[in-house]
Length: 102
Image 1 (spheres, rainbow, N blue to C red):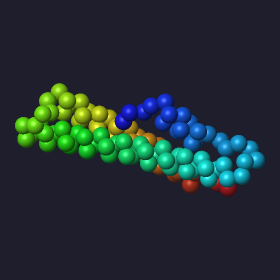
Image 2 (image 1 turned 90 degrees about the vertical axis):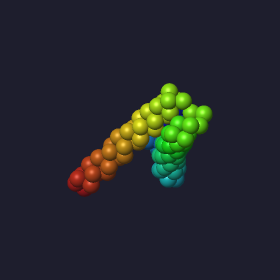
Image 3 (image 1 turned 135 degrees about the vertical axis):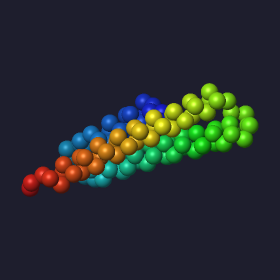
Image 4 (image 1 turned 180 degrees about the vertical axis):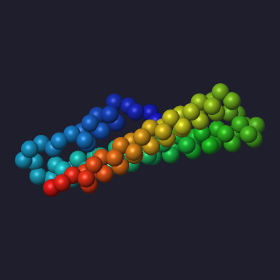
């Protein structure tokens, strides 16, 4: 998954604390965080589809080379693994919040 500066800045803003006394800032941060996650999932999906297309092209004798196909497969694999680690951390944080005593 390609992570550019804009995505990193968006993620930093999404998980940062809202400004004190700003009404609705928490809702805006949730929306930003949701957008970052949605964009990341869409990027992972795009890379998976690109890898599938490269595999199909290679198997049918299309224009794809073995080199390009392997690169597309590795990009898809690494982005999927990153997505799963992020998911695991989110689930872990949620479970930690559930264990907190009020």
